[in-house]
Amino acid sequence: MQATVSPSQTPLEVGVLALIPLVLNIATLLVNIYMLYLLQRQLKSQTHAYILGRTYEISRLLLEHPEASERIFGVHQPEVLVIHAVLTHFEKIYYQHRRYGLLVGEEWEAWLRSMEAFLRTPRVRILWEEAKHQYPEDFKRFIDQEILKAV
Image (cartoon, rainbow, N blue to C red):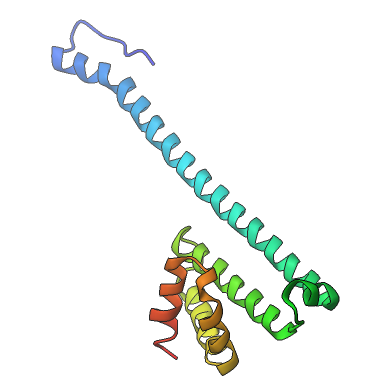
């Protein structure tokens, strides 16, 4: 973009006109940086969802094939597998909210109530205490300090 200079313009006007292309280029650069940030966040979110989807698939296979579950763990306990799958699902929900800024407002509040109701169950709380070492520190703190204190 080239500014047209007329003889009647003051040096200040000429300088301002010369700055317009620079300002537009900087604005375009900032918009592109923000778009890259959003794409990176979306990619991380999708990758996290894909990994957890595979975890659900493994749990489903173990539920459908008790003999494999028995060989691997020495015992087949379908309720344990289901509880782990639900906790892992809650972990996914937590990260979609906290890390990626998704699930906000009423939608997040509804998930909090679901987590509290699930963790209110004595068997689930026992299993959580036995298995929480398998989860990331921030998710453990969230469950222990925010969800369980509300239960």
